[in-house]
Image 1 (cartoon, rainbow, N blue to C red):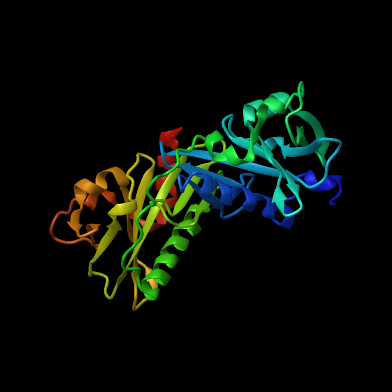
Image 2: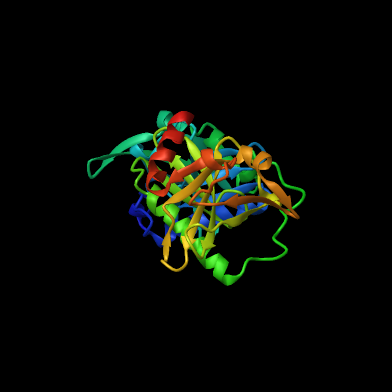
Length: 327
């Protein structure tokens, strides 16, 4: 068994802590029938995941803390106080019993955790400690926050999806997938300069949002679907196809379109940032897809997409302002 120090946060390099987290993520997906989508951080900045709850579009920020050893019937867990960013952030405490989790988990929002937890200092940093019981104990201060592990998704407000999300009938070519990944990584690279934000990717990647930006201090969250077209010359244009079957417009979701200049092996200096809610009105229908025409260099003819053209170098500033509007 691990010693007492294993319960304290050590960051993303702790293999037992990571295993514990994945023992939570997989059941959240299966219990909800896909109604909860898991987004994991590109860089660990204190949040272990952001969960997208599909029935109402809410984003839930989670920290998962596990313990492998017991003190009587308690498994103490600890969270750095500075990593509780917003009052509605959730702390999930687990007891890792061998290769599986115990039958009960602790679920408390940050406001509750701050109020009930004990305090201690760890190398100059304030830690909040909960003496989590591994099963309900009458009169124990944390018993009311215990949830049967089998009902964790229900505790997070999930409504089980009866019909699985439709899949692509014709998957993109390997070349398109590769260039598409370049576009997503370029967007992530630029948004990483939002120093007060965390970036998250979905696991699995099966919904509208392919990247999440979350302002840590306020909880403001924006989801992005990134589309990357290949252009053979600067004045060319390409169609942008958006799968209708899993596209869910929302005020906090945007489509970002980039162009990869094939001969020059660089991204075009202009991109599109389109609110998802206007896509159905702007696009034509091409079978199972919405279709938009992306002309990065512009044309002599006015386009309904002109108002959404943004210099690629200002992408960070653009989303900084959009996050401000959500605060």
